[in-house]
Image (cartoon, rainbow, N blue to C red; front, side, top):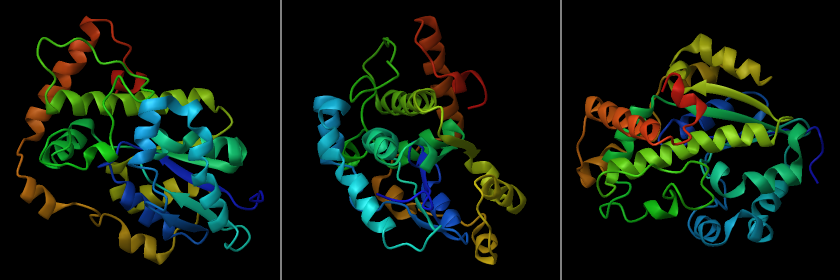
Amino acid sequence: MATESHKLVFSINSGRSGSQYLAQLLGSTKETCAFHEAEPDMSGPFLQMVCQHGLDATFTARNIKAQAIEHIIAQLPPGMRYAETNHMFIKTYFDVIMQHFGENAVQVVRLRRYLPAVLKSFINMGYYTDRNRVWPSWMHVAGYCDSIFSPPPLPREADQFDLAIGYLLDIEARAEHFQARYPGCLIREVRLESLQNPTQVSSFLESLNLTPTPETLVLVGKPANERTQRKAHIDIQTTIKYCEERVSDYINTCRTHGSNLPETINGAL
């Protein structure tokens, strides 16, 4: 079992919101060994396992993640932190981590990005379409897979935009559920937009008791994981304005039907 000298940092995020960039920033500090997707990344069969059987019934099988992290931590110097920013945390392994290591040993970064901008990236990447055949290994459909958010009835068959927005709202709802379930866990919310500013990056890292380095300042604002070529190959185009309209329409539909929207959606997206 990891000692108290080894704290762990994870991230609740939707994907396409700066999680790889966050891993780079965390890894640039003096105290942190950071990964974006350490093996096993808990996608694919683990997500499908949860979708088919739920969290409780699959806990033992998924505990492989805690064991893998324990092995990595055993090789770290005393006081060195383990960090992983994989967006599968909130979907397929948060519960095994929290039970194995305990609330006091875990810190969580709730990483958010302007929701229509995340939606645009999802659309460009072809998620929820046949043009990207691997998306079911990484994302689920809201309303299934132990979802917290339930999509509203729509006056049409759900399209790519509807499915992606439902997923993004479910991640927001899962984040709120996590905070309520683990009140003893230190959670820091940060927006990707604020992590483009050196002063705000330093302030954020210091709030986690981490020490920025010269390498940290070099990384600030540099794009990570843009997937430009992949998006060009998939070739599904949209605009921020249209994404804003679709998000607004979906949220209004939720309110009309009395859907339980995440609290964060009532504030800034």
